[in-house]
Length: 240
Image (cartoon, rainbow, N blue to C red; front, side, top):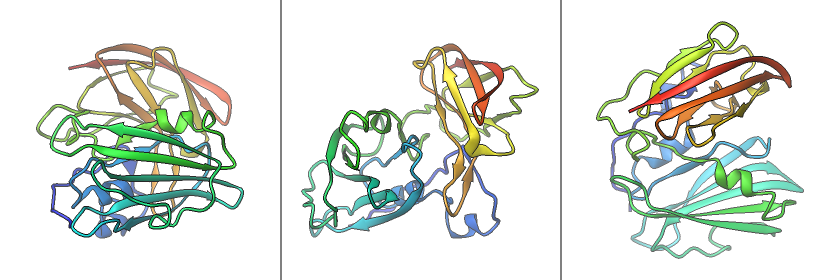
């Protein structure tokens, strides 16, 4: 059973094809949130494995569908499943392969959505190796789920890290780094409690630029690297 819920596209998504938005937001996790009562979360660190596919699976008649997202293939895979906390799902229903480890996460969104159970399965990975994936989960609909507290969506703060060395951003917004090769960029965040680095890259149907997702009021320095080469240090100040 799928109930229609308003959709707010993730601000970090920078479309490279005009047809993307004609079919939806371009982000499969954002699109999946439309119609689901539980909060949908997206891993922003997938251990460099490429996105493969996402599917909705019916586990119990009358309940919201579960999400199954896959990264990589063969001997190295990450499978992220999400479902309402009251919905049971078997490995057979989710069409899971033989896995080596699983990490369980339970999240209660801050606003209108219901509690979600997230299982992160690894093929060729231990539970400890999956920890960065677990820690990188961000709401697909960042504004509606309460990461942002405002009632409207603000345009992202877009900067070129080679030329701009400071940015001020509200909790209800994001910083986007405008760069030529999004997948090559990485960062070291001095105070990760203030903001988290969100990697960019090609996701098949859309491309995202790297950026910063605010987490709390404060300031942090962010060292930015292009293909491992140090480029600049940007100070990110987060306000209410």
